[in-house]
Length: 177
Image 1 (cartoon, one colour):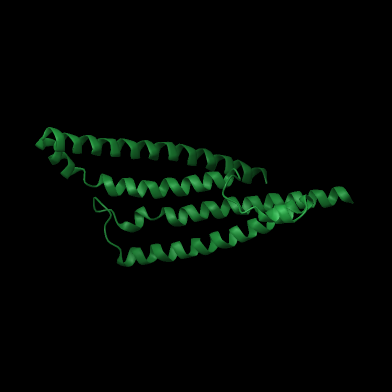
Image 2 (tube, one colour; image 1 turned 30 degrees about the vertical axis):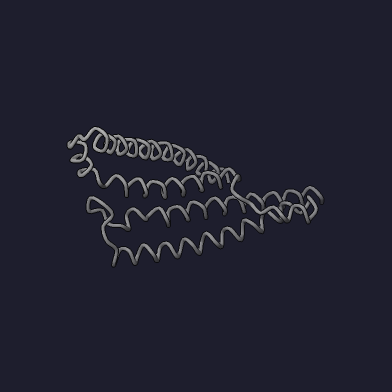
C-alpha cells in the first residue's frame, strides 16, 4: 500500500506541474493571438495578420489544452477526495456507516471510469482508422489520447480510494473484536 501511495503522490506532482505548464501555454498563446488581432484590427498592421496566418494552429491547440487541463485537474482533485459528491446518504444514514458509503461510491465510480475508459479506447481506435488532422499534420487521435489517459488516472484514484475504505472498514471491525 505504501508503494501505491508513493505512486499516487508522484502522479499528483506530475499532474500539478503539467497543469501549470499547460495553463501557462494557454495564456501565452491566447494573449499572443489577442495582441496580434488588436494590431491588425486597430493599428492596421498587415504584418500582424501575416503572423496570424502562420500561427493559425494555436486556437485549436488552446482548445485541446482545455481538455487536457480538465482531465488532469479532475484526476488531481479526485486524488485529494475533493471532487463533486452527492451527499444525501450522509444525512439519511448514521455516521458509523460512512466507510461503507464511501466504499460503495468508490465501487460505482470505478465501474463508471472503467466503462468510460473502454469507450474512450474504442473511440481512439476509430479515430486512428478514420480521423483527420488536428493542426500541423498531427492526427486527431494523438490530441484525444487524454481521454483514455484521463479516465485511467481517475480509475486509479477511485481504486486507491476504495482500497483505503476497505482497510478502514477492516481496522474498525478488528478494533471491535
